[in-house]
Image 1 (cartoon, one colour):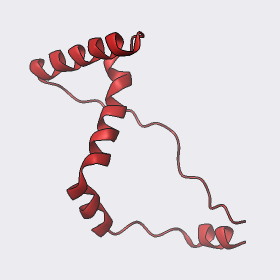
Image 2 (cartoon, helix red, strand yellow; image 1 turned 135 degrees about the vertical axis):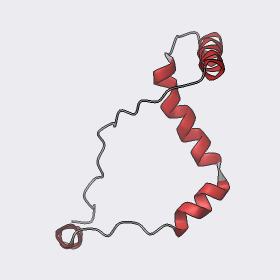
Image 3 (cartoon, helix red, strand yellow; image 1 turned 90 degrees about the vertical axis):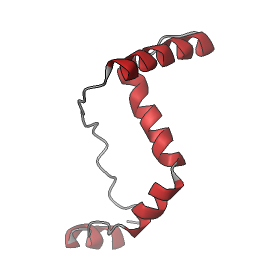
Image 4 (spheres, rainbow, N blue to C red; image 1 turned 60 degrees about the horizontal axis):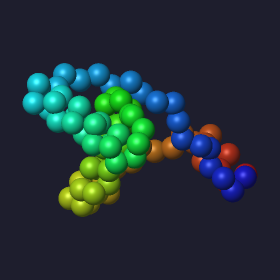
Length: 83
């Protein structure tokens, strides 16, 4: 099969504590989002997209990430990908 096995697409819940000023900024961002698009989005719904955009825009991180060894695929997955 030409298409390799699809990666894990199950969301992972991450919990963190934010300082009050960051929380206020995130609430302001959610309000600005609602003003811009006419629909509300909660801070927890916005954060993954904000982080993704930040990481995608960080060129130094992209360079460093390319230098990090990727985990090897299990042998069975390699055989299935070639079939």
